[in-house]
Image 1 (cartoon, rainbow, N blue to C red):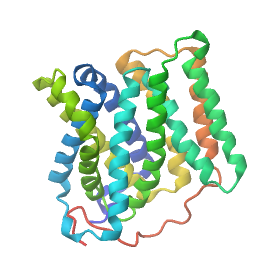
Image 2 (image 1 turned 90 degrees about the vertical axis):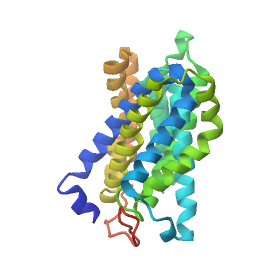
Image 3 (image 1 turned 45 degrees about the horizontal axis):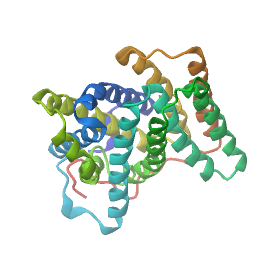
Length: 299
């Protein structure tokens, strides 16, 4: 079944927006699980349950994989696992909206470095000013480990965006995810399993992790990959720039994290920088992927 037929007439931008909201909702819901088994344990359980769900849905045919496809799949799996782990470690220490804004520096910097115009680096610099307003270091309460984890997640996010489009062009639907998420679970096992074993892993923790995994990575990452197959870099990147705002909104509604006026100004600067950075960065005319596999893994 083709991607267009599977998604019907659903606009790709709506899938991207839904995916962003789902990601931030799952991050907010993860806070209660983090309190029991830690950030790495929570990320690992999410990857494990996500891998299970995706295999049941997509049933990938491993024998049909080409050797040339393995590096991108492995790279995306590793990046996805550590992006989630680092980000949850940041959310454990700093507000969700602030963590998303700091993390956004990663893909924004990648976009600036890949641009043919050196002036494109102005936008990561503007976003950095916004992040300073968000963290308010003049109050003397900045959490350096939290900021560091968010920056590490941002590096992974930048690589994730590049690899997701690459993998998404070759695998349709959830078939690519069903191969990368198990790799993410294996990559983060050394960090996650010890925390799960040492923490208070009661039945509700596993149930919560399974429910969150259904939101992200299954639904959110699946929608992201579908959207990326039908959107230009410019369109997707511009939409992506509003994700820090979603982090603020979800943090307020779910975690009761109320931003200050200065922090709202900071997130506005980050969003402006993200949208402006996409100008002139179009992917080009969309074409049918060279090699696409069905959700059942058949060539």
